[in-house]
Image 1: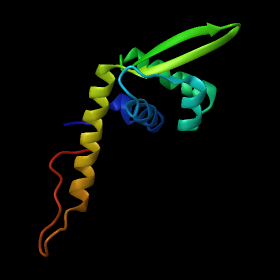
Image 2: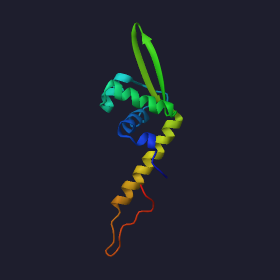
Image 3: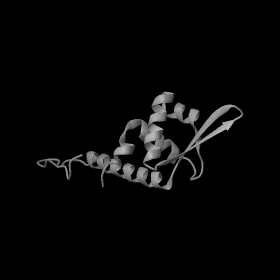
Image 4: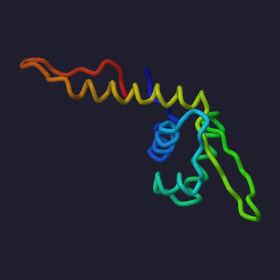
Length: 112
């Protein structure tokens, strides 16, 4: 089990966490997602592009009247990748919480 280098970046991790908390077909408006992850328009846009290119999210751009509306949702591939990355992080945390017995040294099974 390894880290997902696309999701591992902190803003992208927060984006995927927010999207994975939704029902499968539900999407978040760009402005709402921006508030949740506390990012600027440009920063969020760049991270959304990265996640979309990886196939982890779908981006829907509409116009309501003359105003643009961008909606983002996680794909099944993205949800699977997020679950895998969360499992990777949980394993690290679980290993860190294991008590070390007297006389033993903590060893890493594989480099992070």
